[in-house]
Image: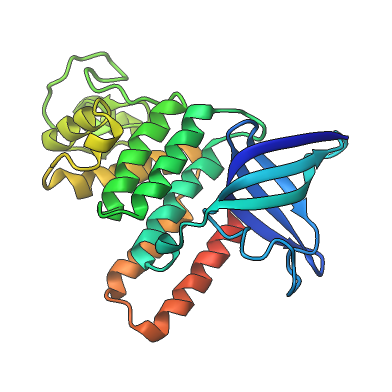
Length: 271
């Protein structure tokens, strides 16, 4: 039975039996890993609140090699990101960021840079930067880190050099008008959004969080979510929550707990 240790972030969980929980972590040393936390659902569980979505900690587990599930021995909190959980906008953006990692990575596929990016994004969500910008900066880098960098200098279908009128964004990058009609799922993208995307992906992390990109930010956020949806094969669950949050904003205090329960359901569905 092998012992494993790594810094890790909780990216999902769901109940198992009467008292256990299957928890998904994204770890620095092992990538995405799933494990059984025994008695985690009991009132006096030794895990306490450590297994909440987004928590950063030190994971210790045992791997028998006979199952894809490891046995979680303990998970010591390094940073709980409480401020993220106390604000629904931050919580929603964190859920989107975590969903990207959970859905776009394979089990046991180590990616140290992506782990670092995830931790930086969670830390940024506790700061003064708008949560939507944090998610945007993360999403641009996450897609590229996983090998899906969109091409912006030419049509990915026919090779026509950009700029060209009425550009769209497809699975691999820009698509000209003629090719977009054949592709079917490409979405229109403005020149300002193309420029903003190109700038964001070339900036250092701290600068990407604060560099003004004007009206293109909302458009680019929608396009980025569409790109992620293409890659995972279905719409992101967290986007549905964020749209509902925007519809009823500001959220009355007595409805906040209802929204947290919605996020809890998303966490379980993401594992």
